[in-house]
Structures are given as structure tokens and as C-alpha cells.
Image (cartoon, rainbow, N blue to C red; front, top):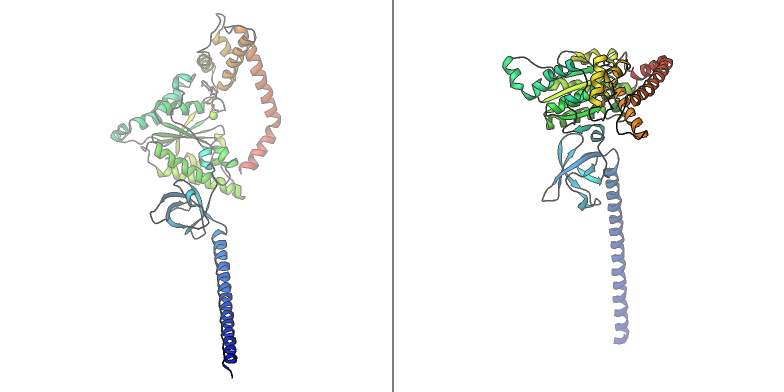
Length: 401
Ligand SMILES: Nc1ncnc2c1ncn2[C@@H]1O[C@H](COP(=O)(O)OP(=O)(O)O)[C@@H](O)[C@H]1O
Ligand SMILES: [Mg+2]
């Protein structure tokens, strides 16, 4: 072979080698690609697993130097967790609500802002603007509240010295609009206590499924805010005597009541939290709630009598310019059966009458017209209740039991 020919063959061989090399490289890269695709599939399924419901709600407490995060999970303990790569790091701030995977090991999502139902469910008044002077009549009830609520909150040592335990809870009962809420607010104000109120029927109807948790949180909050008064309005909605527990709704009400009893049993008579409950259906209350150590002081807040109505008229006309002829005693006399709320409505209506007639002072005629209007509305309403009476009872029975 000539050297030219040899060169030619050698060059061909090099090329062939080179092609083989490239081919094997392609093969290698293809298997690499396959491996990477498998990895991607694996990680995708892992992320899916992490994101699969139910996730655990948690609140970010703090962020550690190494990037891990301390959260308080809604299931209880504080956890140290990682953050999934797809979660925007700048959103992870203390106080942020986040979602953890099922194992609670990783933050997998940042939750949108929302208001916790328990915050919406309670009304907090640091310093109610109602004083005992704003309450007409009810002197005996006020005296009793001072004794069992204000005194122990202000001077617990007095009770320790004498060795008696004041009641933990007080139940105010009586027809609507006669001053139960007013009394609770006033005693909170006069004891320098924070007024925290929840409404039983709302726990049952508006915050379905949250009742027990709300009760727990409210008492936790009350302890933090002590001295505090927890006011539970319409307690009959969660503490009605039950015949049997059938539907899940009833079990939920029962859980709420159990939580309430546990909270009451859990603190001591001289802790700086007092509970005042109100109802206009004391007849249907579960006796468990009235046991010693719970709501063991019952205070009736009845319809005002003649003197009571006079006092209520006095309270609500205090800042009113009255003409000479206004006779509050006579007004009290002709409004037999009126509640405090109705008397307030009468006074407001009388004020409107004077304004309509371009007068600066409210006269007796304004009041008489107002009495006619408010009392006739009342009698229409009461007649309707009479007609609906049996139906309404049916409704409330089927609902409560
Ligand atoms: N004894 C009272 N003295 C003065 N105002 C009263 C009295 N009772 C009721 N009212 C008026 O009626 C309104 C409703 O009373 P409230 O205390 O909420 O009644 P309850 O809680 O018993 O249903 C009060 O805001 C107040 O204006
Ligand atoms: Mg009320």
C-alpha cells in the first residue's frame, strides 16, 4: 500500500472511532436524561404528596438562622420545620398563617389573610361606658353583683381572710330588654374589669363547628386580660336541657357546653375572671350548669315595676330638655308591662316628636304620643307571638333538642 492509501485508511478509522465515541456519548446522555426525568417525576410526586390534603394550619413564630422555621401548629405543639422550595421565602414572617404537610414537617403553602372566627365571635370592651347610675331600678340586683363580682375581683384577700369562696359564675335571668346586659357591663366597668362577651346562639348558628374552640380561646384571652368578666348572652342556646343527643349539630352544641363547664371548673373562685351569663329561658337550662361551683348564684332581672319604670324614665331623660308639664311618674303609671328597652324607645320617640314639631323642649304630649306608638307596637307583637306561640315553641324545641 502506498503511504497515501494508508493515510486514507487511518483517517477513516479515526473518523469511525470518533463517531463511535459520539454515539456512546449520546447513549450516555440519553440514559442520564431518562434518570433525570425519573427524578423529576419522583420529586413531583413528592411535592404532590406534601401538598395533598388535609394540610395542617400553623402560625409562624420565628425564623432560625439556618433557614428553618418555628411554627405553632393548630394541633398543639410548636414545631421546627423546613420550607418547601416553591414557597416564597419573603412571605414567611412571624404571625403569618401557613400550611404544613400532613406530617407537619414542612411549610408547603402560605395561607391567605383571614380573620380568626374566635376574634369575630367575641366583643371586647376594655372599659364599658355603662355605670350603675345608668341603670334604672334594680338596686337589689346591683347590690348582689357588687358582692359576688366586684368585691372578689377588687379585694380577693378579704375572702381569703374570712375563708369563704365567692361564686365563680352568676346567672342573670328574666325577660329581654330589662337590663341584664346593662348590669353585666356596669359591673365590669365598676370593677375595672375587661368586658368580654359572646352570644350563645351565635356560637351555635354562626360559628358552626367552632363553638368549643371559641369558648377555650375566649377564656384563655380572659385570663390574659384579667381582671375580666366573661359575659355569655343567650346561654340557653348552648346549655338547654337535652333529651337525647342525635344529630351532629346537637353533639356540637354538647361539645361547646362541655368545654364551657370544663373552663368554669378549671379556674378558682378567686381567680380574676368572673363569668356572668344571661338567659330569658331559665326554664329550659341544663341543671349541670347550675351546680355549685358553676353558675350557683341566680339573679332575677324582672320586668320593672312602677318604681322601676319611673327610675328608668329618669335615667333616659337625664340629658333631655323637658317641658314643665312632663310627669315621669304618670308616664311610669301608664306603661305597665313595658320593658326598659321599651321605655328607652318611648323617650327616643318623644324626642323625635319634639324635633318634628320644631320644639327645643320635649313636652308631655310628645311622651303620650310616643307611649301610644311604642305600646301599640308592643301589643301587636305580643299578639303575634300568641298566635305563633305554639309554632314557635315547636321550632325551638326541634332546634334545641
Ligand atoms: N333597668 C334599666 N335601666 C335603664 N335602661 C334600661 C334598663 N333595662 C333596659 N334598658 C334599656 O334597654 C336596652 C336593652 O337592655 P339590655 O340590658 O340589653 O337587656 P337584656 O340584656 O336584659 O335583654 C339597654 O341598652 C337600655 O337602653
Ligand atoms: Mg341583652
